[in-house]
Figure (cartoon, rainbow, N blue to C red):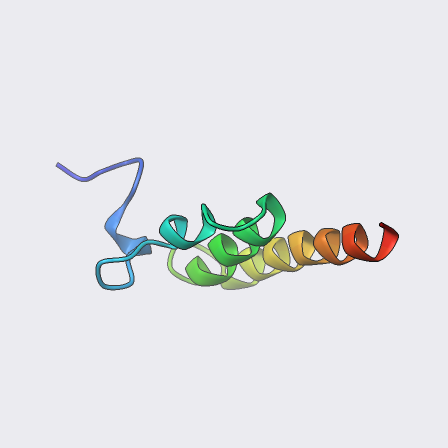
Amino acid sequence: MPDAINPRHYDFGDVQPVDIAEHLSFNLGNVVKYASRAGRKGDALTDLNKARWYLDREIARITSG
């Protein structure tokens, strides 16, 4: 039975993006998540735009502080 929570189409060998993302800040973790799965499920451009949105938020957070 397929795993609906951690589907195999997000795997990179034995590693899933969440394994890396959980060691980063919220914004950077989402950048990794969306960039790494771009094109693996649905439209790649949508995921890349989501990654950019989180990256822009992280840049704004750093530059405003």
